[in-house]
Amino acid sequence: MEPVIMNTLRVFYLCCLATIMTLLLAQPTSAQRPSIADLQAQIDALQVPLDSPAAQVRTALNILPEFQEAVARYFWVEGEVPANRTEAGMTATSTDTSTNYITAVAIVNGTIVVTFGNYADASIVAKSMTFTPYESVDLTISWRCGAAPFPFWFNLLGTAGGGQAAAYIAPTIPASTYPDPCIMTPQPASHNDVIRAQVRNSLDILPVFQEAVAKSYGELGEAPVNRAAAGLTHISTDTQTQFISEVEIVNGTIIVTFGNNANPLIDGKVMTFTPYESIDQTVVWRCGSDSAPSNAGLLGTFGGGTTATYVAPTILPMHQPEPCILRSQPGSQDEIIRAQVLEAFDVVATLQDAVEAAGAALGSPSQPVAPSNRTEAGLTAVGTDTVGLYFHSVDIWNGTITVTYGNEANSVIAYETLSWTPYESVDGTIVWRCGAAPFPAGTQLMGTSAFSTTAVYVAPSSGMLSKYLPHHCRP
Image (tube, rainbow, N blue to C red; front, side, top):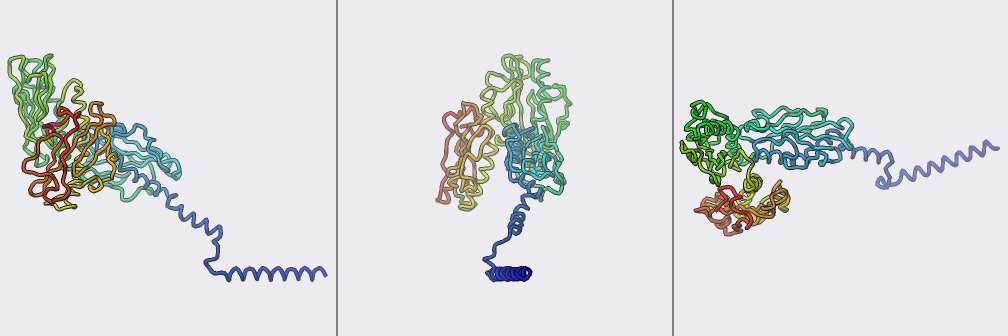
């Protein structure tokens, strides 16, 4: 009997199971629940991009612009690349920049070195990706990514200036993880930036001539009348560089003539360095259009022999290097403050381009409209998004750009402001009035011709004394 009962129960169980399966299969597709295996497959599919080493390396590109801008900013101010993060105006600790896949970001002679770790794939942990800056003849900056071919016709950044040049560092991550494309080129530098960098080239060859003049003065008690009297060759064209065609000495004054590959705006024009002597016979150099050093006379004055002659430069003040008083002794507090004020000038040049472009778009090229704020100029709305070592914000109000100094600036200029006001000429070309400089003749405030938003002139704040400003920003 028992086998019959067992068989009956088996049949009954199978019938019930078949009924349940039939009911389940009869349900609409939308009512079916995905299996655990299906859910796991979907999760795995979502994780694939993040688990890919190449995708993790690509996250480095998100933080890269901040470091590229810091390196470029230092280059335009100093004419060479920053040796480390501190020189680039950033914190000294490379681990301050950390993400899910990045443990540190360093700057080594201008090259940005990104080290991977944290949750990164084992194949790239403790390995690095590098971004090396190069410069073209017109000083446009391009970045070489990893082991990609170097940019054609480019040299390592800083090469033309003769100072600290960038050093290429090979990456250590597998080539299969490189982001693509791997050459990233920022916007070209402004026209004035390029010219200033070329003029700054003259400072690299200057010490040889300064030493020769000072040595001759120390031996003879008067200014050397020419190169030969200073112990140099008598042929001025013996001294040439990429942007300099000759260097002459006339009664102690060093006269640098630009040429060769120099920008047409300075081709054939001169930059001058005039020697003065203090009461203790220390030699002090007057650079270009800057004011004469106080408590000093032209070199040779006290000896009664050949006296130096001041020669005005023929290049525009805006193209002259700043600060432009070069001393053998440490600079005075005024000179230090002047150098701090000048840090913002290259950043302002970028904002000027933004204001001019927005003005033409809001109105027309011949009748521009002053953008009312940073947003209308195509920038972020917050002024503190634009900062430097010595200034903590840059704002735009009706076209006028205002820099507020602070951060590590000298307390004398902390919270003081300096503004650049846009004026328009008859054809709509924008002319910028810096600080307390005179009103640009033959112009009107930007926006006037369009009968729309018009720029408003803003004078420097009361604590921003003229002696802290470059020549073209003074009354």
